[in-house]
Amino acid sequence: MKPIQNILLNKYKNVKHGFFRGFDSKGVSLSVGINIGNNEVAINNRQRIASYFGVEFNNLIILNQKHSNIVHVINDSNINKYKYTSIENALNNEGDAIITNIPNILIGVNTADCAPILLFDHIKNYIAVIHSGWRGTLGNIVENTITELKELGCNHLIASIGPCISKDNLELERKLIPNIYKKFTKDTSEEKCCLDMTGLIISKLHNYKIIENISSVNINTFTNKNFYSYRRSKQKREGLQFSGILLLDN
Image 1 (cartoon, rainbow, N blue to C red):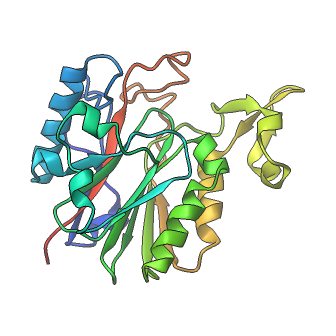
Image 2: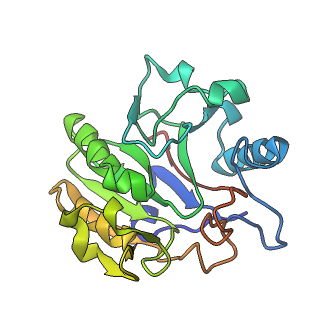
């Protein structure tokens, strides 16, 4: 279950990261989505991912994602409420971005067309993950996360965008998209248009001088059947793939 990696983040020896596919080479599901299909499969895959990163299973932290703009900052004083103890506990913490500087805590997001974004400040040694679907992207989850990082003193961020749906496959009602983002859309009918979500995310990241470098793996989850895709499955929730980042001990 070797994940896809980004050359920018691979330069740094004190972080480990990966964008996992939805299926392994034999077509076996790698879904980590709780309450989507088989929970036993999801927990087993989470355990396998934790083992790949070399961390204890309860140190793998994923929020109960709600397409919100809520950011959680995890530190030594609150870490215990995020550690996995049960499925119920894993669903307690709602939000769509995580920030931490605690070593050996694997933070991640689950996606099936939404964009997973990994961030690393190579001076302050903070890591962050963002679950940025079209709702979260339009709702400023990216801005909220960068603002939190800036307040923590981060000024040297590397950003990596993982597999997500492409601009040709994300069709939305035009009325859902604010006019300020019109240049990231392409009309498909009188009422609908396609949104370049990755382009919009990159544009939002470029607005911050503390972002030193941005990279995208450029994999379209809609057309690549190694990944789960909410839209390809005609909006059925079949599974979710994992993307995550870990800060190692110096």
